[in-house]
Length: 92
Image 1 (tube, one colour):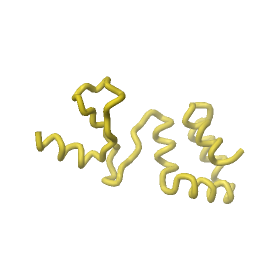
Image 2 (tube, one colour; image 1 turned 135 degrees about the vertical axis):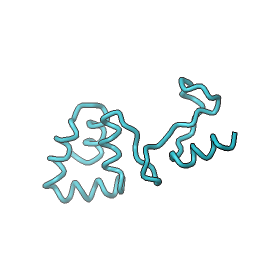
Image 3 (cartoon, helix red, strand yellow; image 1 turned 45 degrees about the horizontal axis):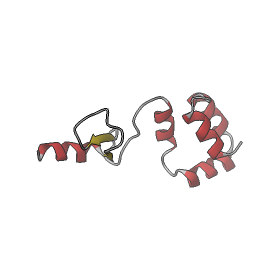
Image 4 (cartoon, one colour; image 1 turned 45 degrees about the vertical axis):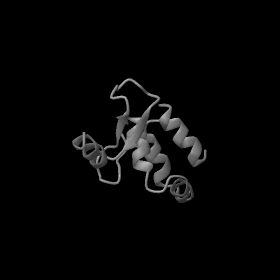
C-alpha cells in the first residue's frame, strides 16, 4: 500500500490513526513518500481523521470564516488561522 492510499483510508475512517502510525513507523520508504506528499502535515491528517481541525501556522486550530456570517453556509467560506480570524472580527 502506498502513502496516498493510506491517507485516503485514514480520512475515510477505514484505518485507525494508531494502525496508520504502526504501518508507517518501521517503513522508511513509506515515510519518505508521505514527506513528499504532505510535508509536515501527517499529524494534521491524523487530526482531521479524528474530526479535529488541522493546526495552522500560528500553532492553533484553523478556522472557517463564513462570509455571510452563517455557519451552515458551506459554499462561501475561507480557511484562516485563528490569529487572522480574530483580527478580522476585531475590525468589524
